[in-house]
Image (cartoon, rainbow, N blue to C red):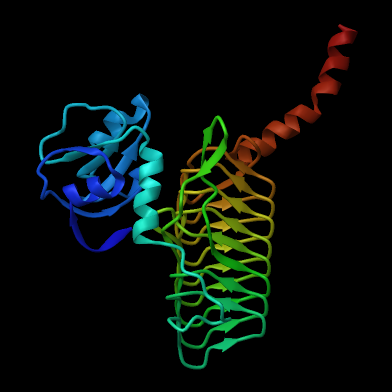
Length: 311
């Protein structure tokens, strides 16, 4: 998430009321999660296990809960609660904007696009040409939708990420300041839910087709010309290559990569990253030809046991 204009290290430190290490005029351009950080970004870290990863990342400003040696060319923000202060920054630059109309005045809707009754189109939403948005669809703020996109009834684009920190008093949400981006020629079925990124974009690539009742988690990127069948749940921060086929009731863990042209058979649990160009099945996931052979062998176990008893 980039700020509307560059800020200085001192300005951000004053915003969250914390100490800083580095040049007061050190440029701060935005905030991001560790997997998408760039130079000029703030990244937060609050566990020693991940200090080195954050300090050596592309981010040039590290919001951290311990005073450590600052890497050359970077700056530190020292906070007693980086999670809380990361949320403060998000709320400051991306505050919630209420809307009391069905289609926000700041929304931009292209030529020949049809919006059916009872839809909500939020602030700063952009919808391209020749789209059909069926009834009862909710499109949250800042969502970007390309041309020739069809969204069936009841789907929701842009809800907050399922991302929480456990505290003694309960669960504290990480505030989502990202977007959903739907590229051209995408079809989204009924009752799908696509969460926005925490700081970046959740993206559905050009020409991909989603069946009904699919969940796509925050910051996930789905490639071009993918087919995804009903009741699939894709966790946050996944990368799905082009022309991947995912059949019904598949679930994934977060942060995995599915290579292009992979085929995942129904009811598979994608527990790890997998190569493209192969077919997969089962939980834990394996190549389908291997897994199906294993199942065939399992069926023979009673017969083998009976043969052993006779010896």
